[in-house]
Length: 246
Image 1 (cartoon, rainbow, N blue to C red):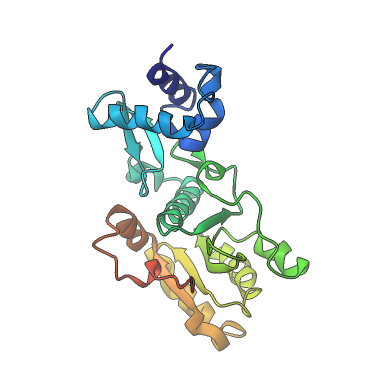
Image 2 (cartoon, one colour):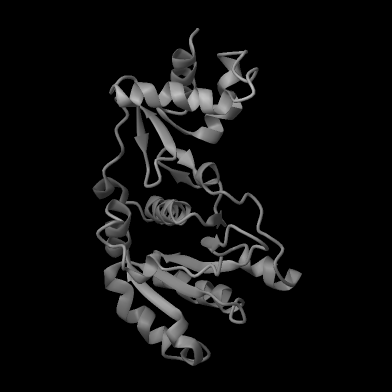
């Protein structure tokens, strides 16, 4: 079996799509000698990129091109995903993780087993464990925030807390979780359906959130999807502006 055939087999095992980490971890099942060379990882990438360049076998998927898919792999249409609140929740989490990765930040999710593009969120997030950046009591609450972005260099601190609020019933717990990070230098984003924006604004106008209302940003799903689909056109959007001080 060639390297190309081995990569194809790994992708087939994962319904046509995989991250490079998955490919690295599983390639030896089909190509036992894959890791014998000192630069075996770049060798595998070179094989795949050659086929991608020639429009054969593979294509790159995702905002930061961090996923490889079979050439005939078809992503599910967003219209279908929107019909299921649970799937839409994990899809928006995945979108935010991808954007964080694209910005060269470290990404963490409270829902590692949730499905995203037939993968799981743990396949695309870069922090399997929440960094121990503060007191255990705060960590225990913070690890339940949907998506967190951390600076990549030096000691890791949260730079963005993102909660996906698919129903108003989940808003108050989301706000309480983010409030635990009030002493840290980050902004809090609430993502929701457009029809819920007024209700979120009303809640933020009450105690205790009104005291730090300017720290909270409310965005509807469509605006974040637009950023994901064309980050260059939205390069000045505040969602993409994360200070890391490095």
